[in-house]
Image (cartoon, rainbow, N blue to C red; front, side, top):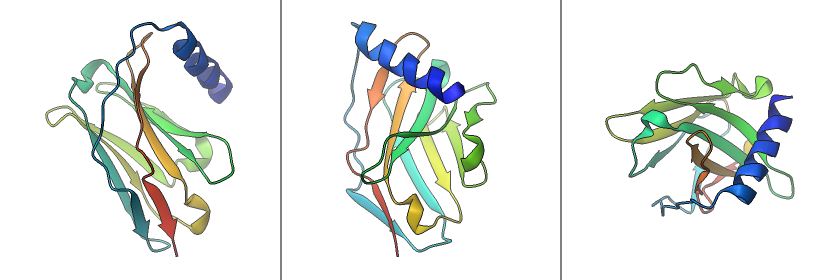
Length: 136
């Protein structure tokens, strides 16, 4: 139910928001890790992360979007149940950095990983332009 509501909310925000701001993030074109090795993808943004929910999503090749979870300053956050043992999300307010940490990743975790910050009723969309995770 959380995911259905989240997708509805995302579409609703995208269609109804007239105040959308975007940022360009410098990220590698791809990240390669060996199976079982940890993964860290960090995004540093120009706004204060204090009032934003920091969401991570992934999209495996040929498949739909999959919500991983979110975190925010002063909240407990949430993660998709089936991914709780694989991923954690941290928010560092002083450096304005949001980090996705992965552990024990397998070839099926290869995907394009996306981040976006969501301040309540405003969608602020940040996209990692192909930070593909390739496992061998």
